[in-house]
Amino acid sequence: MYSPNRQRNILLVILTLLAPVMAQAGAWTTPSGTLWTKVSWFHQSTDEWYTDIAQPILLADNTLGERPAGSRRPYFFDGQYESTAAFIEGYYVLTDAIDIGLQVPWSDQSFGDDTRLDTPAESGFSDVRVFTRWRLFSKPFLFTLKGEPKSPRVTFAMRMV
Image 1: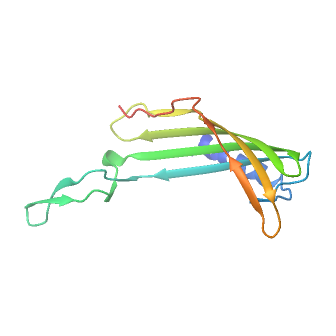
Image 2: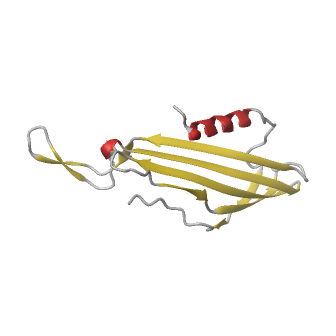
Image 3: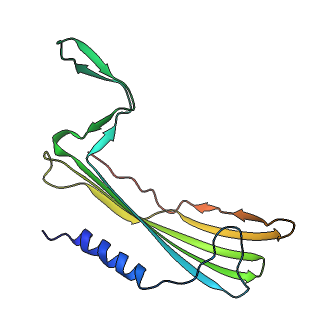
């Protein structure tokens, strides 16, 4: 079965595997003049949901019972929810102790079931984040401060009507 999302996901994995580089993580700042980027990708597909309020149910003895809030249930009418998110980040090291960075997120969500002819879906860029990381000292232990304001660029919400 042809699936453009599946092919796109496989292509992203292949491109990621072809571009390995040495990376440093955590509180360490890299040498001055260094530019590094990172792409994070997440995908979720589910046919279940968690109830947000208690729901009445018919028990086996034909009495009325209750399914508690937070119970996991299959979607009605063979429903299926899919969510994909990608985060593109870049950092530039101004000095050996100060980094600046930018994160641009993108999301793609869809929900379909047997009652719909057209699957509701929404995709696009979301809130942009700007990072600043400052290594205050590295002895007797490493201590770095990080600031991360977020710019509300877009209202991203999928309507299920």
